[in-house]
Length: 289
Image 1 (cartoon, helix red, strand yellow):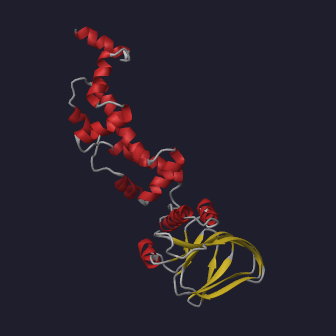
Image 2 (cartoon, one colour):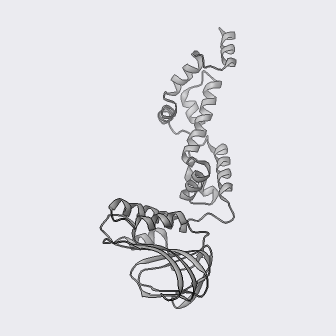
Image 3 (cartoon, one colour):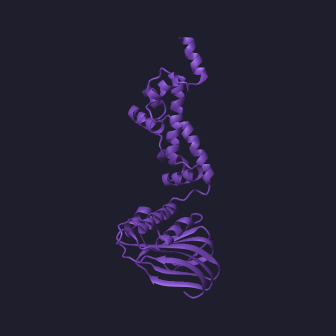
């Protein structure tokens, strides 16, 4: 590899199937080239992905030159000839996978040997893989596998450039407010409405809100249920469950107990008979007695 460059790279020391994982990480690295960088690696029997952070690099894809710029993603499929080079500054992350499941992995993620622009690489995940490869034990191999899986997931399901992370969060909250009462409303239908993959919705919403979208949806439904129980002492629990999007009364009671430590009927009795009852409820009950 002639030329001037910085590399931070690690290779697995064990056999591909030494630890039973779906993603067998062979190696990973972070390169920064400066000039006259060449890596004419020849034909390889493993999957290799490249994710550009900045600068400009070049790859040969079936004999044709491909220019790689910031935010671009490219992968060499097993059996391909790997040739990359740069005459200027180029910073990128790379990852290789092999093992008995590599073809299944490629089909699962729909990976193709083509250049795609998908945005900045997830540096923290690449560094997780690199650091995990420094260790030999099985737990670190699994850690590397999970991080690599997440990298591939983000590569094939990037956030739309027309929708920012905050936009996704706010639009999801609006969808919940509008559809929480519908039992068929789920994260899958919400993600479809937002035009993103369910995993992308989970990742973005959790990162921005500190709570998963599933927990947010359940919490929102429970808040509506609390309001109904507080405002109508005679309403049937099944009516509350149906009105708040729970598909069965027993499931509603189970979730309610998990969050509040008691079932809906017990909670409603406390509202009526304990001193924690709002003043307006006490006075209302007093007028009826």
